Amino acid sequence: MKKHYLSFEKPLKDLDFEIEKLSNSESDNTKLNQLIAEREELEKEIFSDLSSWETVQLARHPNRPYTLDYINAWCDNFTELHGDKAFSDDNAVVAGIGIIDGLKVVIIGQQKGRNTKENIFRNFGMMKPEGYRKALRVMKLAEKFKLPIITLIDTPGADPGIGAEERGQGYAIANNLFEMASIKTQILSIVIGEGASGGALGIGLCDKMIMLEHTWFSVISPEGCASILWKDSSKAPEAAESLKLTPKDLMEHDICNMIVYEPSGGAHRHFDETADILKKSILSELKELRENVNDNFLDYRVSRYDKLGVFRED
Image (cartoon, rainbow, N blue to C red; front, side, top):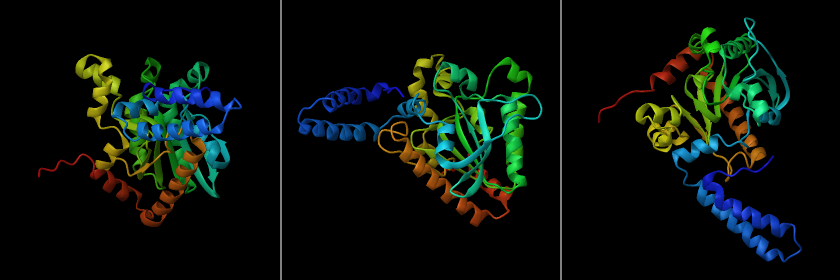
């Protein structure tokens, strides 16, 4: 995969060029080792102090791992299920049954593409009504067979097209929220990239939410917010700060329950390590839910969501 550098990563690009040039030469390794050490320190410095907008950019990184990358890394066996039994399949969402370290689970995740052809096929990760109905159909299977549900969130939003609206986009999302509230099995949602608006919420109602370090979750994208407030999408960086959309912001408001920290440089540079860390977190959280929630899923979710949006006057 071709390396891609974001604007704030440009200093790393220059060092990588020098390191690659020395690696391919027969010169003394002393200079090479010095550059490698210098790069590691610079990377830590850059990634330790990211702004909200830089976090948004990282979540959209073209090399960032997607749902199928994680499924292939975690599952000994995965059987994908297709269609909503009403209209069609939706390639923007992957849903099926898999086995992670011996544990049978249902995994539902939004899937983007790596190039233009794939993105057209995957609709850029924007689900249509049939996608939300497919997701709910597979969730009902999980409930029937008492399998935990893992949802992987990575979308710029639900499909906004006329066809999607004609087929009941708003209703499909709302119905998922209604049904997911009372599904009698564990639901664990993980934000692996972008978590935008109702497009994310439609598979995001859960018992616990995990967010990777360089992700975001918000009612609207920074560009959309800036366009509404200031009629100027170039003010997206300011909007990102105001929206409080990073994992740390959302932990303070009890929306996010756990942050999984990525290796320095991000998941796109250290996928195997990130996938392993995330898998261990998932198995640990599912074990805790099995032991603590029992069959009181509705009460547990009511308690969780009752805490959100509470105003306290000190």
